[in-house]
Amino acid sequence: MPRVAFLGLGAIGLPMARHLARPGHDLAVWNRTASNAEAFAADTGARLAATPAEAARDRDVVVTCLPVSRDVESLLGGADGLLATLQPGAVLVDCTSGDPATSRRMAAALAARGIGFLDAPVSGGVSGAEQGALTVMVGGDASTLERVRPVLECFGKKIVHCGEVGAGDALKAVNNALLAMHIWGTAEGLVALEKAGVKAEVALDVINTSSGRSNASMNLFPDRVVTRAFPRTFRLALLDKDVGIAADLAREQKITAPLLQITAELFRMAHTELGQDADHVEAAQVVERLGGAIIGGRGGAG
Image (tube, rainbow, N blue to C red):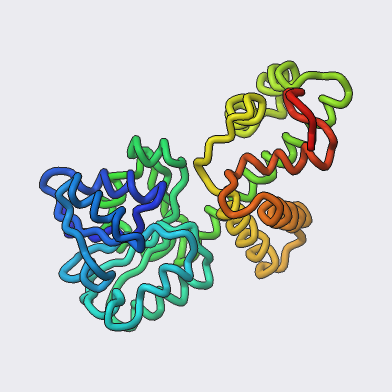
């Protein structure tokens, strides 16, 4: 097993790192909130690093999992940055749901020093990370992927080489844009049906055995919207970011993509209205407010 550093012990990163902290694995960890890394190191026996440079010293693979690409890029330079200690032949695996342009820029900076780079965003949420069953979408050199595959297999059940650097980021963004479309579209349909006298529970029972079903209708709406539970598992702010990346991709590729562009605008609006801490499924509440009905019919739409 390669010597690994893991940077970014957030909601997804923490359980991913736990799979890398198995007995016999040489793992170093760093986190912007030092107390989180201290607790993780005390619990797992991983080596605690005070800076990204210290974490990357003598490491074969550095895995990053941060909110946005620019956060990762900011860790590269300076006396405390990754480039201060990463050696030629090492690989930076960025599991951030990032943007292709920044990933290509980082890859070029690292390649100039003989360091490999893979963009490797993940899908499967907190539960998938806890189970070690994430889907990993990889952009970059195929031979580099094979070198780090044992690391990815610790937390990834399905590992897919998507293409050149940036391809993993692009696919993850489009995947999440489709998630956003399903959430918004399902909410609009259910609000309309509520106002027409069809209860959400009845509608979902039919939709989920018919051609309109999706993960949103089968899981998110019954478990979170109808129940009004809204657990905070994936921030709306991050979904807004991902849909924006997908919309930018469509513009860069010069394709007509009105649904992507409209979805980006709608989720930017929802993010602005609900704030930084809202869960992604809470976007349905904006649809309820606009439509004047609550999905499930519990209370008013105010």
